[in-house]
Length: 148
Image (cartoon, rainbow, N blue to C red; front, side, top):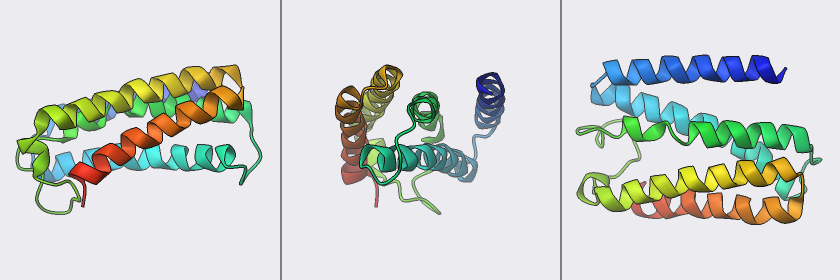
């Protein structure tokens, strides 16, 4: 099962990366990054329910989802291209003006999701909860500054 999921994720990542590199159109970039963020939210929501005790904690499923989110967190940056801050997007033009700050926030997201994936391997909620909280702070930091 893990091999199938890994192969599927690898195929998705390869196709998504290839599509993004070939597509310099702002509308395509918006669609690409929204897809990456939506996939992350799908998994993060289930992990959040486990962390908050709203659903049974399944260590294997949590770890699998944390690994996926860690990989997905690397994708959205390619979708933040010039001209992609207007149209069907909640991304603010401030991203272009404060690119270094935005990039730092996205890099922090990548680091924090990797740390969460590592904590999840322990199966210990005492390690997972703080790491999960740090990912949430990463998300909030960018949302507060760069998203409508």
